[in-house]
Image 1 (cartoon, one colour):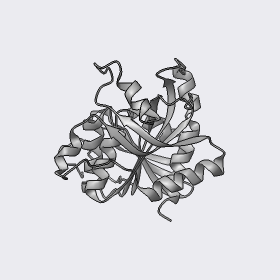
Image 2: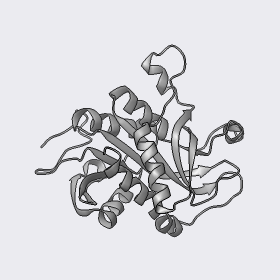
Image 3: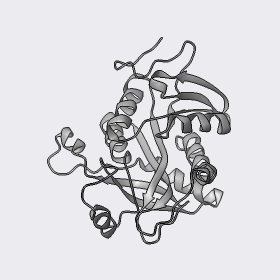
Image 4: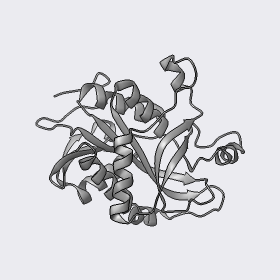
Length: 242
């Protein structure tokens, strides 16, 4: 059995991880993607119930695995996937809260960069401010796939926060004023981890609620409305490296 140093990932006998991994936060979402979108999915990890599967999409191998919530969790899994299991690219697929005036529920947001209130970037000891940024080849492929599929998407900056319940009630007002499209909890950490590893990363989100308008989707609507993001992410995963 091939296990990571943290033992958070332990490959089951006879399994492997594809070079590109889709990462929702919820491991049950990973299970849903595997069962509904991949052909012949095989479970490769279930340590701590962080389910991971490898299957094929359009004849090419793709893996999907949960990441948990927040930067500490996604960076743990991303670091191990990049450094110990030969993963070349991770595509984050998740939900986010809209904050932009022209952002609405069900909109697809593709994050070209991610501002953050986390101090994680300071650990890389770059004089100045390190900007967490998507990999352009994956970003451009995702945009191309949205056009092919007729999916309405916005490309821009998101705000990655360490707080689900932030103590400053004006933080989202400030983020909106600076042009951020949405607020979420993982993209900046994923981008920093990929940059440090010399690997690829992209984060995309569908808007489940809007912070200022009060628009929101029910749990059932979220389940049925995120098909567009899954299609874009999967097609990006199998075509970006071509």
